[in-house]
Length: 376
Ligand code: COA
Image (cartoon, rainbow, N blue to C red):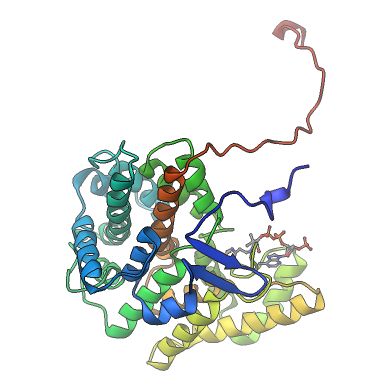
């Protein structure tokens, strides 16, 4: 019997992360996400995901240097960004540009552990640089090189705007990247592992993953959340709006999760950052509208006896928007973070590979006979 959406199916063993859906816990290599968000930078988290341990200062400095080198883009990928027709979605550009990175990566066809490690670092840095380049090029500006004095998260903001971000924005971006870096066998990671499972190269695997992340039921939800907040516009309109959406049978973006049956542990961390941002002179409005929708959804779900809670995308939307990031780039930010997790999973898959090939349950017609085209 087929399990719809592979719910509950264990597809692989992994030592990268653990998602405890009943308890609302997310754990990267033994560390709770709250602990990492408070005590480690995104670059440290990348080290943890790729090598299994948090770095000491010397190891972090080495990794930082390699990330900064990787964030200096070469030609074919930037040309993809420059030639994308106006109005192309930034995730579509990113998908094609990351694929084009393979043209000039000297390790591209090498699936050894050493080459994969080099590619994981480069791809993560390049995804940040490409996301920033997409934003700059569409505004008629040239891409800028990273500032080695800043971490990768702060560089994402710097390379988009050309100005060093303030301390709060830099910290928020860094924490947001940490929260989005890894999440077990989610759809895009699974896609990456399926591709890697054919012993295709890392660039092919992460290109599959970016295409998968783009969908509104996965990474694309954060952009939709912001569109919803704009549509609702006032906290006082939230209850009526939510009721209307549910009566029409629509899903409310930023709520629900396949694994969590309680609050997504990343949501309160982002909620806290949203409130800090609002408290420091940022626009309060989107946080207030978010709270209105959260309360209304809570009441409606209780009436319907459903365990549907805010997920990571619910508060990331207002945080990014208040920081001045264009809505259609939100999913690209998710990709910048998740590249660290995808590449860790490709390494794990290649290190102990077996082709991933499930079966389908056939429910179509039987025993038909083909007749020549003139007799049909
Ligand atoms: N709003 C309203 N109802 C929701 C809902 C939401 N966001 N998410 C789930 N539900 C309801 C479904 O309608 C369904 O109700 P039913 O049993 O009466 O048919 C029930 O809860 C189970 O939902 P289902 O779609 O089967 O869950 P899933 O595990 O297949 O899907 C998601 C999980 C994440 C795809 C789904 O919750 C969703 O579409 N959420 C919105 C998009 C989003 O925020 N994605 C980001 C995830 S991090």
